[in-house]
Image (cartoon, rainbow, N blue to C red):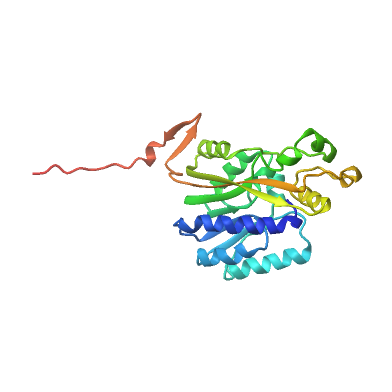
Length: 267
């Protein structure tokens, strides 16, 4: 996702925070991935006080934008040490650049649909989350841009499928399979209306729904002037992280983790 769609990222981040209003969570460290400037960054420290904000910022930020982001994160972290790096680090290494058990909340806005291996991302999230931590996320579902997926438009626009076309049921199953607990999923459709083809095509490109829009795409005159976004929301907990591990969907408990109960016989 690229910066021309910032208004959408801001809107979805605000909706995610509204959904977390009923969640009770003690936080010391929060990871924003992707990290971008927006109103949610002012709201998060108010919602979760005395919290350090760590971030994996979007790829392609200018030096000035990156400097502003670093200053903002230090400010909102009350000048406590916090980590900020590019999401490119994850793409290159397959690892979130944080220690095991180092954050209490991961807040991810409209990212997962662009990942070629979302299960690995879930594994990394669980690795860096502390016991009792929470993963909160949103992403675009498979019905996004359904108006453009007919043969009449998809070939002319070089429209591509989402790398991770998961519906909310797929995600719920994946969360349970990766050891998360009590996943909560919901979905909504956002309907966008456009006055011009140019603006619609700009948003389609910003949403990474096309590899490129050439002259032919710009000359299409009969586009539907509307775009449907399927937005999937979810959160899930990390519970019992240190008590068991799963293998082939079977949980194994280390005997050393089992406490001994001593009972005194009554006289």
